[in-house]
Amino acid sequence: MAAAAAGPLGALQAGRARLVAARCARLGLGLGLPGSATSSRAGPAICARGWARAGGAAAPRRGYSSEVKAEDELRVRYLEEENRGADLKERVKMHPSEVGPFVSKTRAVINEIANLPVPTIAAIDGLALGGGLELALACDIRVAASSAKMGLVETKLAIIPGAGGTQRLPRAIGMSLAKELIFSARVLDGQEAKAVGLVSHVPQQNEEGDAAYRKALDLAKEFLPQGPVAMRVAKLAINQGMEVDLVTGLAIEEACYAQTIPTKDRLEGLLAFKEKRPPRYKGE
Image 1 (cartoon, rainbow, N blue to C red):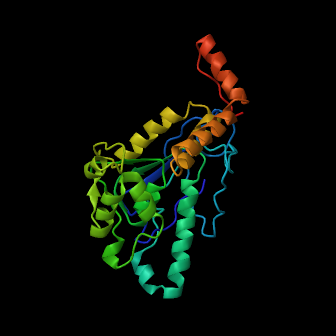
Image 2: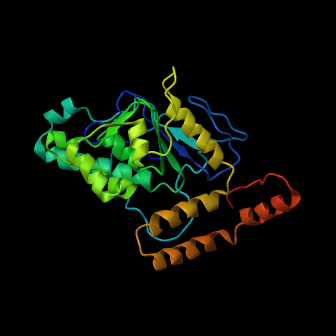
Image 3: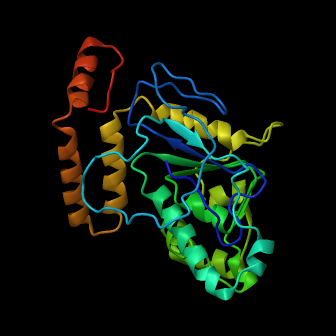
């Protein structure tokens, strides 16, 4: 999967904000913990440090296909705190002509995260300010520890969120409140973020400082047993349906549902139900 690049104010600062991507294309692999590579059959490591695509990302493809992108063997991947991003001290040294392309590349990489065809969970255990929060907003689900801090604070530096924040924050919490937070550059803690609907879960921070990450893994474990094709097209139906009127959205849902009908997994699900056993999905 593509991982995160820098945001305007430095993505994923040192507070262990991590990204967990539940890769559901292949259900033969187990769920690995940080630094592990557990698998029930041969395949690449399912947990590894994230990486950023620095070049121009391909434009998201429209349509209702359930095809997977590369690395479809991966089930879970996370970004460690070492994958931070831009340092404001570095930004000061940038020539004005360099800033636009830099932000454009950042936006493209974060769009790649948003367009992954599998569920993604942002786990915020520390700071997610500026680009860090923009990265989290590109994920399907956000989990923040009670002690986490997050906000789009760019207006303090006389700029605006440039990697999707002005568009994704209003879609997540509503236009009026998003404007208030961006205009004020306010920083929220985990409980405040939950209250406004920015995050879904707020576990109490633990001594290890990874409460959000652990909660994200628990959620990923809930997602992993489901049918891979169903997961991909469900995400596609939701994402594209939210951008259109209800009638068009229902047509999108119908087209996405049709993708599941000819699959072997659908028949396996029915057979497993009849035989009262867990299904063995293969993403086919």
